[in-house]
Length: 540
Image (cartoon, rainbow, N blue to C red; front, top):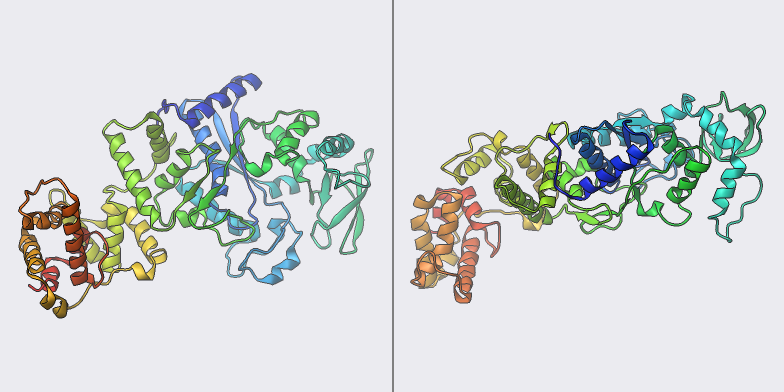
């Protein structure tokens, strides 16, 4: 794909990143970074940590510049707590590296970290997010960071002095400070205390809560890591990161991002990345997401009910400092209406520049277009069809084939993957009380009780079915019946009186067809039931 020229937040951020990169090292590869800890489900809030640099890196690549997006898996972090729904016996593993903790029961993955990393990798691929993954377990245990660890240990007093500037009076530090914590070679946990370090020999002595004590040489010992506030700036310098966003929790005074900005320069000889603070992402009806507590929707969950481009769009259209919520409930219908309307505007050459840019970033990347549904029928219409037919392929195809007689849909592949998303939404999100169950037999008592005007309205509808059997035709028909009864032309402007008559007519039809006074859009419902069954239920 070519460059996206419209001025949106991504373009402006890319301008800043390119300018900063050229100040640091003109012509060199530009590195954008993300970091995720697979301590539990990697949720839709975490996705912003990846999506923000992805969009910026992708824009830089669209402009023909050499840019790489690295994603660090913080899988050498300690296992801090057992998430909800996991066997409480996993508490015995608290303090171990995430890659040393067994995967949850029933998992096919080798360890805890892989169990939560693997589905995220698959979801990111589906979203078109290209990155180079870096396992911090591999980096630390292979000795890649040995020089950086020795540097930090040698500069421990200087690091301590930087940290002391931000410590509160209520938390005084006692004893020597060491920026490195080993995992015990006996119990594999980080319940360790460094008791001494010799700068000349690089020998480190530690004791563990399990009772084990030993002396190791850091040039050869690779079962420990730098504490987070030192680890992060070390990596900035090691990878040459130019751009990395951070959450609001990393930007308060004394936070890892603020402290890291000083340490990366004073200790590691690097520079702090530029990058915005990003706001949280929520789910409709849910509180702030926390991966360590479990039970929060993941990117994989979202991709079961919405197409990749739509999920990308939610992040692309909002500036990073704007919070937003992702709807798993009925609001998804409104979201899709908005998305489809934008698609039509863009196709016709309309829309605001920023909206067009967000649409372009949602539907494709520098590597090409994302897969799309060939015939994107309205999500709410497909919801009604899947609901009414209980998901039967033959019935779904019959109905969608009747939606537009001028260009009939002849294969369900034409409405995939959107149809598959709708199926999953109906199965998992549509409340039981909102499901549609059509009558099998006419409501004889209701038909017998109809007033003359009601009986006439039902007759007019039934008489017009054959000549209007399409979505547009039936839409026109159901709205025109009350107009005919009022002696008004088909194109009569709506009045309060006419709208009231239409509402009464619709409620009557719903009662005759499904036994309640509201339901899915009537034209869709009529198509789903079929002309013969509709005529039968209307007393024909």
